[in-house]
Every structure is written in structure tokens, then in C-alpha cells.
Image 1 (cartoon, helix red, strand yellow):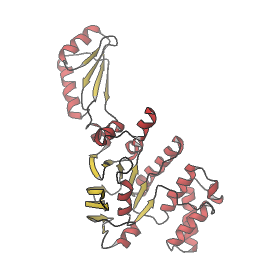
Image 2 (cartoon, one colour):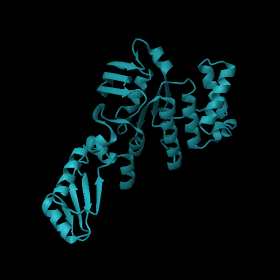
Image 3 (cartoon, rainbow, N blue to C red):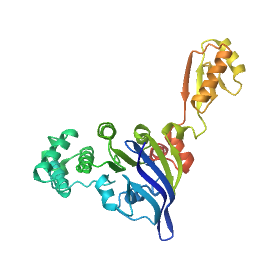
Image 4 (tube, rainbow, N blue to C red):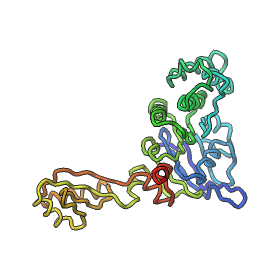
Amino acid sequence: MSSAIDVRGLHKSYGDKVVLGGIDLNVAEGTIFSLLGPNGAGKTTAVQILSTLIAADAGEIRVAGHDLHQDPEAVRAAIGVTGQFSAVDGLLTGRENLIMMADLHHLGRREARRRADDLLKQFDLVEAGQKLAMTYSGGMKRRIDLAMTLVGNPRIIFLDEPTTGLDPRSRHNMWQLIRQLVTDGGVTVFLTTQYLEEADQLADRIAVLDHGRLVAEGTAEELKRLVPGGHIRLRFTSPDEFALAGQVLPTAVPNNESLVLQVPNDGSVHSLRALLARIDDASLEVDELTVHTPDLDDVFFAVTGQPTAHQEVITK
């Protein structure tokens, strides 16, 4: 699979403060890649560099097949950016915002209006498109913001904290739109977020950035297996089978009241197959088997030493 973004040795410092300390990234075309990290980790700086807004101190960077240092104009022509803060002009209607963006892309009067109307339909904003953007809800503003990013038909979209401040329903609606962009439009999405559930739901691959360095990378399932605490839960209906299973699986933690054994396991196919073979060899009658793995909140805390925004809310 071809690379939409390929980064080698990306460095960025401000004075003595190292913001990005030599990171490597590779994002495959037509996928969603999520960059996670606590506040100040360097996520937004990485997006600003990859989208040509600021210059890197060092590193080899190719975006959409173009060398970012040698041909930034070609990179800009291939990308779209939705930043943390809305770029919508509240004194214009939603449709006027889209037409303004189309004019900036030099689409021409007729094409600009056609593109604006198409995007209003795509984002279910036809009626709202005739109203001033200042009257929009937070979710509607983010949708029109994303629609403005798509006016130029970018091949790669950078979404920097796209659902911050949205209510759960608006966040899920935004997730659906992002998925459709990839599955229907074939675009590549580079997503930064502090919402671990967001990355878990959307991303094909995830990288965790902390103090300017990548501390973990992989699929959501691969990252979850980095953290201890995964287990297989075996529930029995027969006390005799439960007792026998305890002998066959001596590392299991028993719950005598519920006839449940908790077997330490990383959740991988290999280890699960090995456990099933032991159960089969002993002819154990298991009533129910469930796999439990750590979630991305656990991964985030383990590799950065910091709680997620979700965990901070719970503990306050």
C-alpha cells in the first residue's frame, strides 16, 4: 500500500524546548491514522509542520508523494486542514462560507455554487446553509468547518481535535462523516485527539506521542496488548468442572461463588488457541468464555504516565 505521509527524523524546537525529538511516521493511503498524546506532547506542532504552516528544524517529509521542503505548493494542493478552532465566519451563512472557500480555490462562480450545494447535501446542512453560521450549534459548526476543508477535494485531511467540546451525539455524527470520507471518498485522514474512544472507533493505526517522542504505535488491538491485565474469563455451571479447571489452569484466579476462573492472557490469537487446546485436552465443559483486554485509556496511562481526559473527569 502506498504512503500518503512518510516522515523520517522530524525535529522541532523552540529555544531550549524540544517539541518534536526526531519522530518517524508512515501513514498508508486511504486509512485513518490517529496521533494521541497529552496536552503539550507536540501533536498540533506535528500537524502544523505536515500541513506546511510552520517549518521543521530537520527531517525528511513526503506528503502525497511530494517533498514538503522542496515542493510545499504541491503539498498544499493535496491537503485540507480542520484545526482545533472553527474557521467558520459567523457573519456569513453556511453556504456563503463554502462559496468563500471555493473562491479561494479559484473554482469559478458556477462551480463554486455547485460545490457548496453538494457539500451542504452531503453534510445534511441544506436548510441550515441559508442561516447565519453564528446561529449554529457546536456540532453544526464543526460539520460546516469540515465541509469547508473538503471544498478543494483534498487527498489528505488533517483533523486536529475535531470533536473537542461536542456532545456525544454530535461526536458520533462527526465520526460517521469521517468514516464516509475514507470509505466513499478514498481520502486519507490524519487525526489528532485526546479522546481515546475516538481513536479506538476510527483509526486503522494509532501512534502515541509524549514529550515530543513516539512511545507506542500499532493498531488499537496491538496497543492494548502492551498493557498487562488482559485475561480470559471462564464460567462454569458444574462445581466439579470448575474444580478440575482450577487444577488444569493453576495460574487462573478463581471466584468460588460464581464458578468463574480468570486466566491471565494477552488476548492474542496464539495464546487464545493455546488455552483452548488445554481446555479441549482436559475435556473441560466451559459454559461461557469471554476475552477481556485493557482499553486505550490503560495504554495511554501506561506509556505516558498521565491519565486521559476521561480518567481525569472520573477522578475529580
